[in-house]
Length: 381
Image (tube, rainbow, N blue to C red):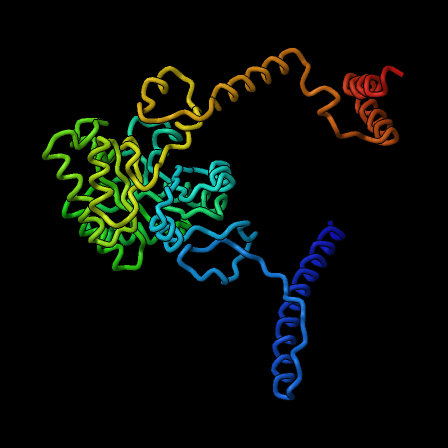
């Protein structure tokens, strides 16, 4: 134990020394470059000290150094998103809730990863989005921010975290950015109070994505998950609310479960990207829920509640269930793990010592088990 402690202490000292060396290299390079310029000599080239890089907020300068790996492609920022919208290019948005889903969204080159409160339903198993808490959302945000280095990250403000006052909303949104690693937040609704909240957030330096049409957090008022904007009055209201959210400073607006004509009117009425979900093809981009588009849920209950507008691009749930069934079968038959997946061995000398020790302790059955397994590992020799 003492030797182990000494080795660990030596490793720590080596790490500190390497860190100090890197810093000194940077300082020496700066000093020599300054001295050379004063003498009229060309500056000498020094290798840049290795720096750990980590994904930062999308609104931070690109050349800022962070810890962790640098994204293989430039990070999506609000400026790049706007440029894509101005160029008439469609915007892709997919929800993500944990590290694995974030990695896949990142690898696919999706523009925006939305940490949605739909996690309440597809991850936690609730029937609505209402039960999920801010702390639970922050946990999802943290995991996604570790897995997705390239997309713009937007976190849903959950029900109950922003309705009471602008101060409450600012506090919740600030935690989303500081603790959750998000670039922006999304809030639902376009009522005067929601517009005021959105403006307060933007004025506080927090980027906001709006959401009109079907707003799942309002199902107690709407009477369930029902399409919106199917009458003259409600259609006009959807358009007006989107315009108000734009005036409040929202950089984009989600348009959910409305007729194509209404979504087209919203898209033409505002000068920010509209992200459709169940709203036809006239919007600036589209968003789908990760689990829905991949076909994760195979239980008849989930199939019954999968939205009509969701295209299933894979049948991942069937693959997962099949793999789990094969695992169960191989465990029960003894086929798994077998020799192929039992990679660790004890040397013959140590194995013989173990057998003698077990026999001395009167554990003859255990000693016999070791000998029998060695016999089988050696091919019966």
